[in-house]
Image (cartoon, rainbow, N blue to C red; front, top):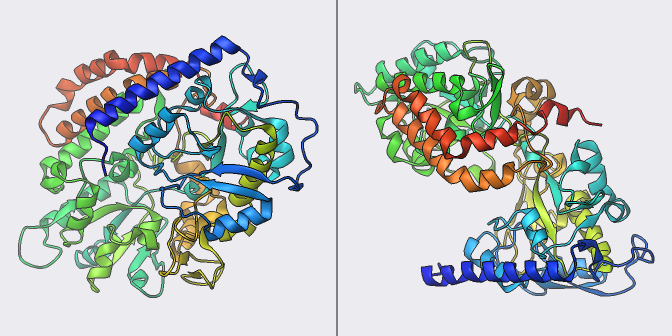
Length: 572
């Protein structure tokens, strides 16, 4: 049930009062946060694996939806393994209102990772709500996590607390599920064949049954010019053979631009939301000359009728439904979509393969642009570390030692697979070849939380092995053959020129302050530009100036102080 406006307003007021009071109290007592009585001398802490003393811990993770039942199956096994008593969190941490209420009350669990984020890591800490995690304790009690940071530079330099050398505001996760290109152009292969248009390279089906035998892949790509000719043919030459002028080349949507525009924009060497060096200066992607050329191409395609005119009125979910009607020839897809991973069911473009046995699809490498550029924005700007796992201020070093061992096991040790899927064979099943395909919980058990407790205490971190448990064999093959190959990623992942990974500037604060209005400016101009409602050349300078005057200039000035991403990735 949604909390009404008055209640939400009161909650926000309460949050500010609580945080203000906590902040004042903290500053009154001491300016040195390391002097907290809960974080005493680390000498005398138990050795790793010593769980002789029973501890009470209130645990929460990235997937807490408030549906966990006390005494659940995972809880009991963790309690026995680590000699703890777990207090469960009955709050939906995906719900912003509920998260704000929890923060306002000050009754935070010992561990938490809110999907509905309310404060930054620094804000949680400066308001006295979280504690730091010493590096020496990470090395001692979380060796697998420490190894992950060793392997992902500059991992140990991220999230360091202000004024501290080896203490961290939060723990991070490894986003292994993003270790590949995220988007790929997908064409109606049956239409290409009918119109006599050849694929750009050799093609092979990505599977042998269930529709996968009708989805083909090539690691070659069409140029933008070739793509445009294909879209014209899809629009003008009756590819579905019904004798009507009712088909279109492509179907964008009015939200999630980084989905439908990623590879087309990447053909100009630009990634939405990032920055680049242009004419010797740092500039934002959405005010770059390359982005302008992309908009002009899309506006031309729209003017020529290659784009379904309803795109401005439908969102991504509606576009899936419309694509299934069979009137669109091109659609962007993630490898998991065309690999038909279970979680993608109903999404375009594979949904039409499920509906119509005559349909065939062709997945290609990203389009090649006018200067030979191809690729797309990297999912994460620098390395593959992301998200934040917090430790509450009230947690003692003794409790932290136990928490870190639990954290290390359930998030980085493959033996802990049971915390996610139970016993494979009893509670869940392989969807294909054992150890090489997805694991799916059987329908008689809840997939998340409930009386089993799956995912109830886990953090959002996926090494390659863990990511594979949510990936079909077909998708894994696509990633191994192309989308996740190191040489492909090195060539095609577009990263920002500069990035404040270690919070050395005021970028985060400025971005939080101005992001909303800048997004509105960018989204409105893009929609009007592509829809032909404005003359891009005539309005461009005014648009750029509006962007800069609305906070963009300040943000870029701060980012210009940040390190180059190439330097960050080369740190030892």
